[in-house]
Image 1 (cartoon, rainbow, N blue to C red):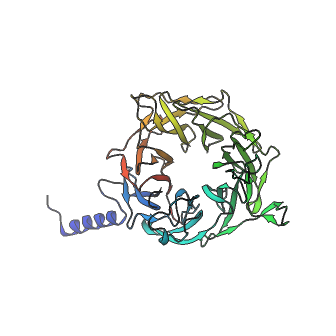
Image 2: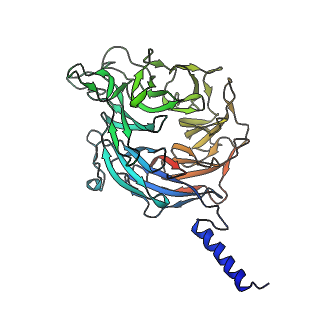
Image 3: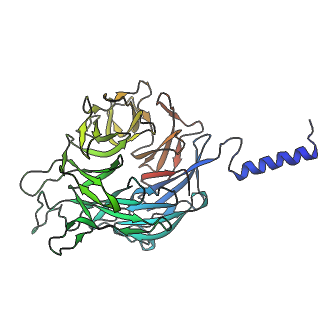
Length: 435
């Protein structure tokens, strides 16, 4: 059948519009952007996420510089216009990486701000300095107006003994540096601690202290922040076991410690703390060559109470769980495992659980659970349309999975589930909009 001149013109117009919107017969357009950190070369890989297939396509000019050394955490502003990369920085006598002279934030711990342009392109804006040392995590407050940065070492903290300075239970501590976010420029401004003064200077502290050796934090509900602390073994005296520091969120970015300033947890090797719905989950890697466990808690007045049934053992044969993610409905929980003790299951995998109200987690009844992914997974996200899960892997790849909204089961993307990111990928973040 031949098309008339008008018909041919109309067809060409439709095709042109589809191409302009990023749609083809094989795809459904871009539903969001993804940014993946890489510690090997201090880079950020950028991708477009395809709606129809979940495939990732490299954004032009990707990868971008992370701005500083050893990027470990990444946060997208609530409007999607700005991205903040937390660079852990070099420690001790570490050798500066190749190209360090071109890092605008240098090799110390830093926060690099980027603006998000068309097609997810990142443009470096400026550097900001945390009040402590070696930042490890960051998150937004419930309003999106403040950025919390978790420093593994607070100002003046002593966690490694020297000939003249021993480690004590009170000398080793971390901190949260709080910044307000300018909505027009994304610029960060330091928020002082109005509750506590420095005993030596009588000036307000510029940070909010937390327990020893913190590794991650989470915001729960509309008013609580919890940091996961790995504890410390002092030079003499009793060791401080892993614990959680709770803060309540106040106005103007202020954090206030609750009456119970330390929450004890029964964990051997805690690796992550994450919030899903009304539950806070802590992963415990446990003893070597064991599946580890997941500790679910309900949140009270910025306190944690063990969920009925207590800790839940991870899927048999898995080992070294490092991260959890509750899906957007709160019905399913996914756990990243870096290794395995069973040769019949994947070395690195995702364990899946059903979340039942007021009941223990229940392993998802799927013969493919746990699900195979790339080697050495670090972080995990759900895409903006809630169709796919992605993991960033230490082997420099991203793994994508289809998420069944009804059963919670995961399956491979239809056109390949492995995507090359950047060397020694650490964490990742996604955004579905730029306001």
